[in-house]
Amino acid sequence: MAKHQFQTEIGQLLHLMTHSLYSNREIFLRELISNANDALDKFNYLRLTDEKFKEQEWSPKINIKLDKEDRSIAVSDNGIGMNEEDLINNLGTIAKSGTRAFLEQLTGDAKKDNNLIGQFGVGFYSVFMVAERVDVISKKAGEETAYKFSSDGTGEFDVTPVVKDEHGTVVYLKLKEDATEFLDHWRVKEIVKKYSDHIPYPIFLHYEVEENVGEGDKVEMKKVKKSEQVNEAKALWTLPKSELKKEDYVEFYSTLWHDSEEPLTWIHSKAEGTLEYTTLFYIPRTAPADIFRADFQPGVKLYVKRVFITDDEKELLPLYLRFVRGIIDSEDLPLNVSREMLQENRILANIKQASVKKILAAIKKLDEEKFDRFVDQYNKLIKEGIYTDHLNRETLLEIVRYKSSKVEGLTSLDDYIKRAGEREGETKQEIYYLIGDDEHVLRNSPLLEAYKKADLEVLIMDDKEIDEIVTPSIGEYKGWKLVDIATVDAPEAEDKEELEKLNEEYTPFIEKLKNILGDAVKDVRVTTRLTESPSCVVPDSSDPMASMRHLFRQMGQEEPELPLILEINPEHEMIKKLSTMEDEKVLEESAWVLLDSAKLAEGLEPKDKVAFSRRIADLLSRAL
Image (cartoon, rainbow, N blue to C red):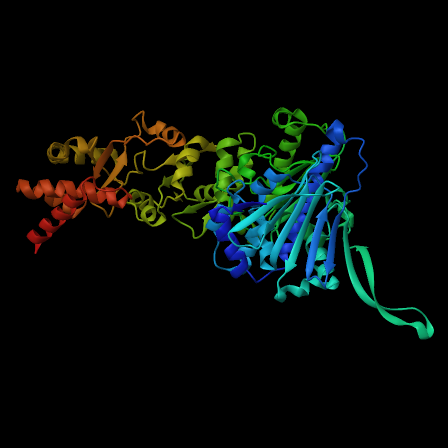
């Protein structure tokens, strides 16, 4: 007998399952059936593609055996099975960082946390919510030796060789005393119907009941063994839409993707003609918890002629649609299609292209409440698609939403254009935007002042990491140019002659500021973009490094620091007084305060915080 220690995160998870997550204990059976279904899928594929198994007679099934006397449940399948290495890797250690990710996502809300169990592929461990001991006996297809994994859910598990005739797996649970409700065959049938009715393999329930046996005077109560199939066992996506109800789609989604929430929508279609395939896609109401992880689990399963091929291929849909759950079932792909073939296959490329169009069309058709929910959950991914999917960019630009300086909530680009076009005398076809990582800072940026005064709407883009890459790549939308207000001159409140006169008037003062600030600024100039603030800073958009910043970010390298231009407001009382200031010490302190406070207003940090604080204190002392 070989003893093993559970990995640290598995230990934490087991403690959680044993002591905390009790609100929905029935899901343990859903998870065991789901695992059995996966094992049957994998052997079915092997039987059709591997010469060693092609002649083997096989009747796929899942069995659930209830034993009230032994206080146990056994769930078995004749699927692909596991060897010693598989048992240790799948049950004793972390697979794909799933367990660690699960622990990171826990909220403390038992209902939500139970829902995460299936999403993160840690469903097997839910058995410890109801079992005081678990034995997993498994034999891998094509191998001679079977193995038994045993654990009581504490810090250790055993793996030992055993004898088993057929390939497949048996999960034996010795139930806790407070979990005997799961020995009631009516209760188990209810759970199977609720979660697993559309598993495409038959699920048989075996149990004993007491019945009157015999006739006349010889009637006596005896225990009678019963067996019955308790699921429909039909691949739902193969059925005509006319035969399916909303409840069928929702139950199927819940079964396969372990989500207790109803999806926002689903798209079920069958293509016939040059290519024959069926697709069924779902958009989850809540974004999968691993959606922004590099090791996210893909949500689309690929079948060929109803034979499961893979659920681990990330290229079945574009990466920005990685939130979509669903099924692609092709009649034209070969059963032995390899991963390399999948990535280059023209048939799959055509299916992918058509599927994307259907999914995006369905998103556009969502009602207001569902669309708002979609944007709340997936707006960042739509932006990602704008950058990567040029073929569908126009549709994605119709879907994406932004915050605005003029309207509450979010707005579309089309609505921005409509409002701008309604402004009297408006001739410029420009969509103005400002990028940063703090909405409050952006809404109070001095750069907005002139636009507010000119009654021009500005889009507030506070997903800086993605907006800085995506938005400049858009260029134009329906003939309207997207313009970053931090890189262009503001709409001028004064005429050009007046601005030139101000520049000339303030030239001596500007030269003094340049001498004081030195290399800390690229330039100092008068601006009409400010109405309330004394100064602001803007990047030098003509600097060649400005267009390279997003490339540095993509490569994970530190972005080059762009030289800033200090702009001063000649109408502000502070600037007027400083321009005639003869006290050089006060002027020097004030020049740095003008620069550092302008940086703060844009969410940037002063280079020397201690010096900034001291200067503020000095100037206040003089004023008091």
